[in-house]
Image (tube, rainbow, N blue to C red; front, side):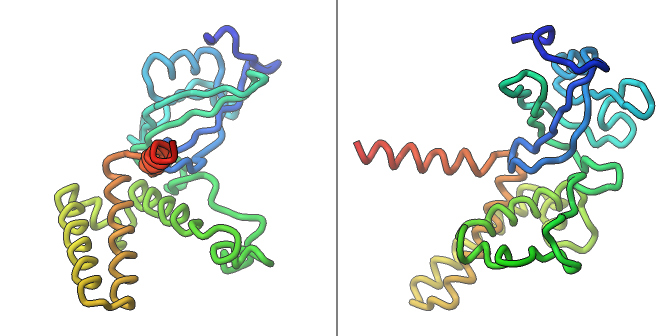
Length: 221
């Protein structure tokens, strides 16, 4: 499929949902016309059409927060796009990692209301992994001062690797000591630092999970 087959609306625009290619977090909703879509395909960075300013704009042109395009998908009607990117900084003009930070199902404290508060324990054992992955991505984009994750990204891959090695050793020691209380804390630390490493390497956790699925399917044959 090429650009000419995309179905633009009566104003010559098509909605483009920008999504983090690593953790699948939705970053923003923007619009493209034929020219901006073509430039996005050519440069492998996001270009949009500003409806308020009636002009073409290159994401990160002034802020430096560019978005490297990994893929552009279209829906079954060919009238909407999902742009998978690796962001170099916040997506939102406010300085936030994502433009979608509010929740209509959250109370004043930001907690989900009703039965959804217990979602991690009841319906999805691994929801906290998804949330942690998103928080790590947000820290990398926004680099808030004083945050430990910011410190790790600022120090770079060598520091992150050192922490992964240290935490792996602590897991071994806790297991050898037959100390389940210590072990659960050390495993939690290891998982966190591995997720930071995956983010630094721009390797989606999904790809790691796919390896596990492939191995399992091979053993089942």
